[in-house]
Amino acid sequence: MSRVSSASRLSALLFCLAALTACGRDASKVASAAAEPSGTTPTAASPLLQTTAATRPGAFGDTLADSITIQRADRGRLMGREDAMWVVMISDFQCPYCKQWHDSSMANLKRDYIDAGKIRLAYLHLPLSIHRHAKAQAEASMCAAVQNKFWEYADALFREQRAFQPIDNPTGKLDDIGRELKLDMPGFSRCRTSNAIRMLVENDERQATQARVQSTPSFLVGEFLVQGALPYKDFRKAIDTALAVAKSRRTR
Image 1 (cartoon, rainbow, N blue to C red):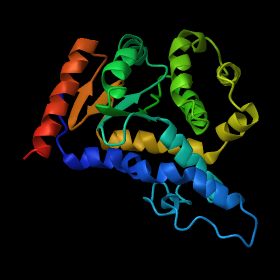
Image 2: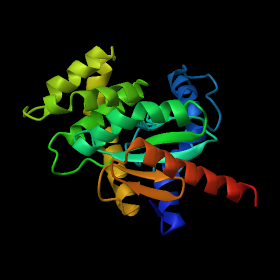
Image 3: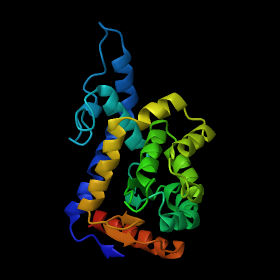
């Protein structure tokens, strides 16, 4: 575990995530306003339209619908209380070490820290070029996030990791998982062909690169960078250390 050498790197990585804490709550209001008949008064000054350049309409698409899709997808890959310490997981669904960490630690992390209100977890995509289906899986997971099923879809992707290895076209398998989770399949299919989702995943890759993360899984735990599929007992030590550091800063 090493301290992130520049606070600005961590700030850059969390920039969108922190912004959508407020704006994500209002995405449904904006969607309702967009659907209102002409002559009615729309929701005033939604934060969805006033956030960072990364989430404004035009950054990932030219329409309000694109922006709403981005907000819902981005919000869907967060888990935990809004006032808790950030932990950002940087991962690849075809990475065997990511699966190893997920299978051995994810349920414990949720029980001990997320459900307990101690951390807020965010998933950042870094689909490695050596994994031919990783980017398609990342995009599909974000489309599941639009329907508030990101974490369930992620669980299924890790569970079915070996099943993807021999196939040339992952579409059928990605759809099978969507049907298993009872997603709105026409909406899921439309989402997977959208430039907005593709560019959102590409933005994740840029954010990870800016934070100088080159391998998966990696984790930004508070202000510390943790790399590799650590055993859960060691990962707990990293979180507890970061929580203690954060608490000491607040009490100064």
